[in-house]
Length: 126
Image (cartoon, rainbow, N blue to C red; front, side, top):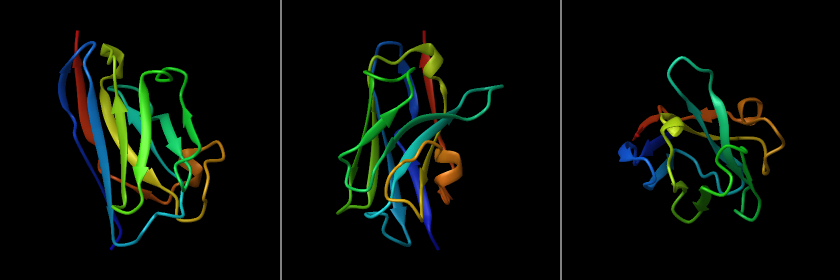
């Protein structure tokens, strides 16, 4: 059974940092694109960041560019999201996603992903 499990969420003050992890089990995603989306209360899920299979290409939403960094460790089958300079509006449930079909992100994590985690809550206090 393939599972993606997020961790690292919690309460953080505005301006602070947090690192999320997404651990995959059941199969390796070393040849596949992965990414993060988030959902704030009362809002639709939105794209946050994506990374290609070897980590050399990364993609970010404008709202997090320059503050968040996505990375991966294929040897450990783990993906990360380093979040710096957090803002109140970053408060959301963060979900990791993985494609079973694509090696690179092609513009829609929602269409390209086949596996999803259960989410981890990040709350930024102002």
